[in-house]
Length: 381
Image 1 (cartoon, rainbow, N blue to C red):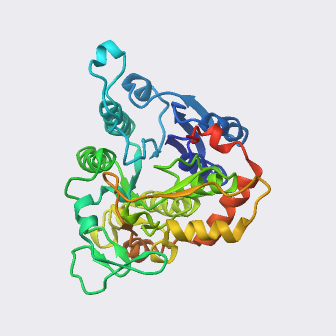
Image 2: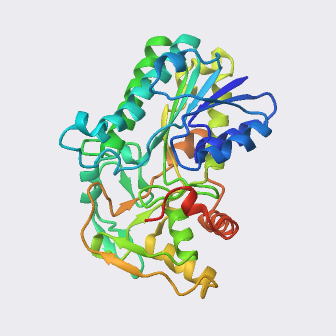
């Protein structure tokens, strides 16, 4: 079968590509506009593994609709930052010769999805949409009652919030705005994909992923935080705990893309099963599931920092970089986001196989081998 991966030279897309290239019977085509600093580095290794790489922008409808027909599309292309699109606009966009940042975000994340959906309609291609935990309501996340332990925020157990349990946030948690411009473009993409799949009869799977992490991620402060933090810590650059009292107690889960690839492989195989199976309502898994390392992979930024201290201790790169605290919260930040993947486990028998300690060690070894990674990803400031 032929597989198209959008954002195929990015961190997640490239690891999904490597996974499917290692499986028998797959021809892999990658599309990327290479706007993310460092993504060009993935191109040659992927081509050497047998992938075909096409430089194209999802905003270019004609370019996307002229791509070769593929049986499946995995859509990984997006600007994945909750802070994206919030830059202050110049007084005169025309005079400044600069496009509105919010419009650019919507064009990338939503208009690009429309063109992918038109492609799937044209070729009757199945679609796997890689979505995000940030489709859940910022207000609802901020209203979750938490207690403060020595190193992290923890859930208060006596609360009756729909879609919330001690295991985390499930698919019934509120998606009411505000979400962030990024989050709402991803939620709108989910809705559009569902409508297209229903109207034109192609298979669709939507995977709402937790915090992605692994070696080779181009970490920045607003995305890829684990890689960003480790590289800055190791090479003694300043770091900051931002918001929620400046203690670093905010909590996230983490997920390695290879674990996501294992689930996607199951979803595609299910859709390729005989029609008698896929058409039976009793056998049809839910289209939309959370995919994460769950509560077992949860960590706070302070705990990540403490792990770095234990891992590296005194460094040959000089004294530790200054660690500062910023008390004020940033817009769209949330103190605690841990996804409950019980539905994926119940439906597919899927659980994340890579524990956070293994993911962190993989990133740490990569950081030691690539001292210039922050410069490559333009993450130094």
